[in-house]
Image (cartoon, rainbow, N blue to C red; front, side, top):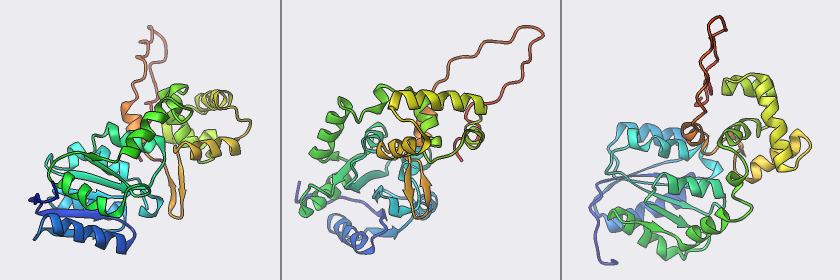
Length: 261
């Protein structure tokens, strides 16, 4: 495959590190000479560029330096990115939820920058540019081991509890969280107590630590990021509510009102 030349015409690189972005640009040009390669440093800039420019290759990191959640872009990929746009994620991330989400979103490539030799990155760019799949073995092994180990928090938390944890995991009180989720403060309080029980914590600060440890929240210089929150909310299927009988109050509050904000 080393002698194959891809036919990528336009590429977008999302990396806060300018030197790393320039290295990636040179790699793209080596596998697709003459390609137009753009570089941006934030999620907002990347989304704007993807909306305004036909992009065939999107290379991105997923770190806290990007001022946003890259998963938000990838979640909307089917609607906002053309089917011809291939995605390569370059990261040293070791968050089980984040990497599992990338698999769920059918990302073509994930390059482990912590364990792979630098020269392998060129192979990753070439492979994904050709429309093939490149996932570092270490990433696949990490996901496989995590799915059977303590990192697979989804094994003992329901989807609903994970959604609530994504909101209250930044230290929000029940009233604030209820406004984000479109639920009553009493409901949030009930879920919080159950999370305390299941996770073995006694107070809000400990819950915040667990939420950060498992990747439900990430504290950055630009604010709190909830990786994959939209993916969780979109995948959640609440049980069908009973139809109120005659004379009962039919007014109900929408579940997760404003959840995507």
